[in-house]
Image (cartoon, rainbow over all chains, first blue to last red; front, side, top):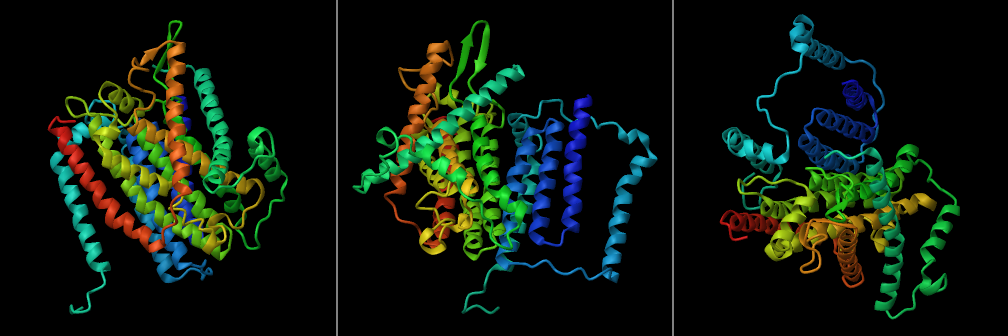
Length: 171
Length: 347
């Protein structure tokens, strides 16, 4: 029990420190790397919850693929670290919005102590890859397919936006 | 099921030792083989047949001065080679060297971590390994290094898709009666031992996975991040001393790990018809299994080296076209056909 708590604190610290640094760092490459650290921290949190599959996918997809693409674009554009310009109106407003969102997320836990207890899982099975796949393709097949369709739509849209129009085609 | 921490430590030490022994042997084998293929002599001065040459090179690397270019990012410059080496070594943690050893009243599995997610760990480690090369290229503050790092990230993203899809083609062969399987490499091997090797069931998948593995390990014909004629040394242009040595170690360890994974996934791992059959064996049988496994890995590495000294390097646009227009559609086709045949109960 105490081990679990230490592991949780460890990974949660990494995830939060990474997240804060993403915002604070001025160098975009450093910011991207802190985001990777944050993702790895979250993967660790998944592991402490016994969701190894989710942790592996988090590392593979987010840390290993998406962030590599981010880094690729940052390096390709050769972004310089912009100088600090002080607190503008827009920055102040975003800061306020961020604090308000954080308060909104924390408020239910402060008001209702019952929420602090761990949620009970919907399905009483060990979270192995086989079990997850079995449920995903039988019981939750419809939501799964709908999410896939949504991703497909997003992909088609992205390609349409990014595609250069052919010469004979009106723009 | 859970093993004592000491046993896990021992197994880790053994696997680490095997990999670290394999790396210098592989470097030497590469140099000797390339010399043989090009009708040269190759390193033959230090020790019998030049066998101590890697050791001499290591000592030389350790005593060289560590240089960092002006304007380099100090922390990332130092950490990048370590990322590349560690991620390569990490892959070996889930590779089973053999089946299960029956010793006294105890059963010892001949793998460091027989996790349910073995194959995913390999993919995750390989995708994190890109950071070593990309960051090394960026932190050097040099245009050649930066270009090498850029190429590396684009190449890895493109070929990882093929790698993962070819892998799925293997995993669909691994399901049980309800269609539920696991990502464990031990299960994949046990399945192959019970039927036939996956290379015969999914030959296209084998070809695709092997090609993508060449790209993931930055070996010719896919070594564009390094490309010495155009980029001097690519991502490691500015590296010297043992930091360069770590990049070097990372590349060869990744080769060894990649060959081990391919042997497990497609070539039956420790299984060989009429030689090793049972999964649970005594000490003699376990040694035989490990020997069979290592023999296969060595044979595959021979092929790896052969390809490097036979094929010329791709041009960058050719590399991208091959990855996205040929390998990706083929790997989707492979998944469809293999999955269909597996569902129909043919494979």
